[in-house]
Image 1 (cartoon, each protein chain N blue to C red):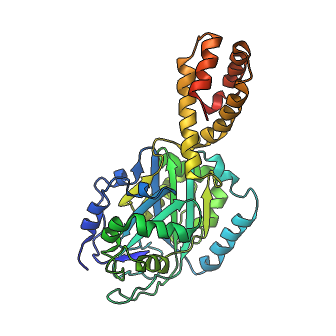
Image 2: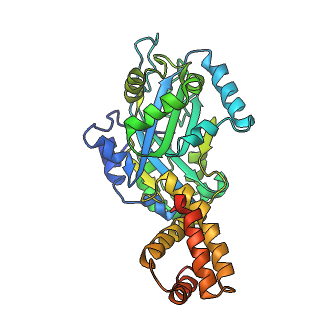
Image 3: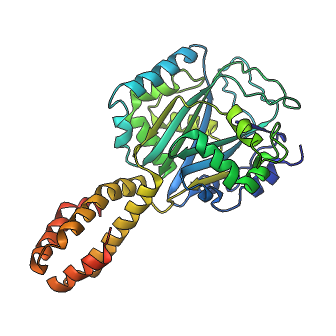
Length: 157
Length: 202
């Protein structure tokens, strides 16, 4: 392979790279050099090399999400997974999708505090709440006519 | 999970920073699972998925955005030069997206979900039990892996803020819809009531 973990870590310094995928709530890349051996464990699990874990919490179906990742994140994907064994030479090609799906680990249990809410709705709702708080603070003691007018103009949904 | 060639891992300096994006904090752990966990964990996961309200205790922990558990039975193989490795035991992967302090997070998990914690980690080697919280925190710390890159789409928001916003936004829209038909005086009264009723979400 061409790069070290240190290089990979530097590439991860790209700010908010996952913001390019507008269905992503949370995401992480984790370099796993080895599994921790507990003293009570009879035998060690030697991984033989480091592994790169990618995890994402996103809206909608997996298949189209991976398509978006491979197309919209192509340059970053090439840099990130390009140092991994078996990754297609040009990570932007369709081979990347097959590669990522081949390496997928099935989730046993997933919990979300707001499971049916899309990222778009979360962002819009947070914006409305912020606006409402600012409006309530600013309009304290305002006359009814001015308050009514300001509400209709400023808090359009 | 894909293979990185170099065996050197992330350093510890600045490790906590890499697990943080604004208010959001990442926790990632792996633990080795005893033979019977191969059966117990999938059954436990299925039970939690199928039984309504089984995760309500997690919802009480209002600082969790999301959490995930996965049982890793084998390492995906991508051909040479990846070393072929057969895991001697399965591994439990756990990740969480939460806000607030790490210590408080583990404390809350330990005290709110003591029996549920056994279901998740009882089959893992070295699990000391969730109470007292001290040894459990040490256990989690030992099995934790720091992220190289962590992202939240709304880093400024806590889980509580998100839930409050999701409750509040439709109420604001409903009031806006009605406000057009109100006189200024009627609206002033409605606005006052709105602020009183929905104060907890502001």
